[in-house]
Image (tube, rainbow, N blue to C red; front, side, top):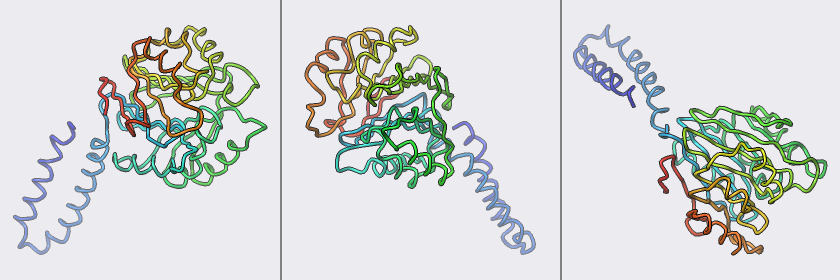
Length: 300
C-alpha cells in the first residue's frame, strides 16, 4: 500500500484545484478531463494493491466431490484443477469465489490429469473468466479433454502447452511452481498425474492429484521434495494415496482434503490414521466448506 502515500495527497490537490477554479470557465474546460485522467491513473495503481495477498495462500474451493485449488502470490493467481462429480458447477463456484476476492483474471491454469472430477469444469471456466496460460498433462488416446480444452483456450485467448519429459519451474508472482511430469509412461489416468510444488520462502504446498502410492514413492525417490507445510491429500483421501513414505518425506503440518458426498468412502479411515500419525491437522471441504491456508499458517 506504499503507493497510497502519494496518491491520496494527489487526489486532495486535484479536489482543491477544482474548488479554487470553479469560477474560471476556461480552466474548467481542461481541468475536468485532466482530473478524470488522474483518477483513472490512480485507480490503475491502487486496484492491484487491493487484491494483493501478503505471502502465498492456497485455497481449496468447495466443489463437492472433486478438486479445485487456488494459489495466490502477490497479485498472481494460479488454479490447479477444476472439476466435480457432484451437482455443483465447479466453474461457477470458482469464478464466484475469485470475483468475491476482487480477482478478474487467472494467470496460470494447471491440471494434474484428465479425470472429470479434476478437469470437467475447465471448459466452462474458460468461458466465464479470462485465463492467460495453461499447462496440461500429456495427451491420452483414451480421453479427449486435452483437445476440448485446447480448442476452447485458443478461442478465448489462453496460451496452452503440454508438460515435457523433465521437471520444470514456473514463476508465479513472488512464488514458484515446480512441475514433475508423470513418473511412468502409460498406465491408467491416475498413474499419469502431474505433481506441483508451490513455494514461496519457507512455505511449500504439494499437489499430486490422484497419484497412487507407486507414483508418490517415485516422486520421493527423486530426493527433491522439501518439508511441506501443506499437502493436498492424494485422490481425495483414498486408501491408495498419501502413502507413508510421502508423509515421512514431507512431514506436513496441514493436510487439505478436497472431498464431497461420495460412494467411495473418501476420505477412508486408513488415510486419516496415516495423517494423524504424522501429526498433521486435517481440514476437509465437506466439513468446513472452502478453506484457505496462508503462508503464516493461518486457516480461514
